Image (tube, rainbow, N blue to C red; front, side):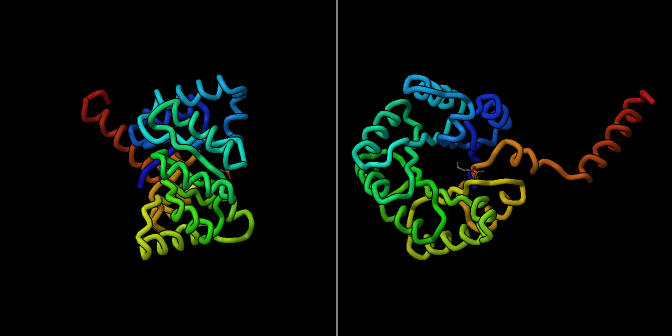
Length: 220
Ligand code: G3P
């Protein structure tokens, strides 16, 4: 399973990248606005900087909702760097645009996916990635991880090549459950990635080892 970081914050991206386990980055308009990135030039520049930090697929979301403008915007985003993946919302115009990008060799990430039916349409259009929002599904009283398992089963049966990118990850347990359910990628906030490091027995064990290391060195 690939690890992406779900943020537009450059410090978090650098910290995750330094772990050596990062395969890509996803952003969305909310995450970009949080970093106060405004205007076409600043947006393009920010995506370029992210591409220079991380060697992997970088999702940049279109801000349009009509076929022609999604295509126009996506072409500009894709021209920023070869690793840019155009992120397109799961709407009728978005599906048409994803098919256009597929036919023209531009990678896509179909976002705002909340059902298996939507995931089938994204795969039929040739999306590189499909992004089910598992945390938001949990918030609405359904089971986000179960949707990942269902899409994984359908894609396996049908031979769809679209990669399942589990998004809206809220904690380390989500990452483990998505790995078990067949996600190809998890895109996570830095806190959820770092949460995987933690176990109280690791901390206790290390404390003891460090104390005994001092004995070995003859310092105590
Ligand atoms: O990139 C989209 C997604 O991960 C959103 O997460 O926490 O806003 O539901 P969240």
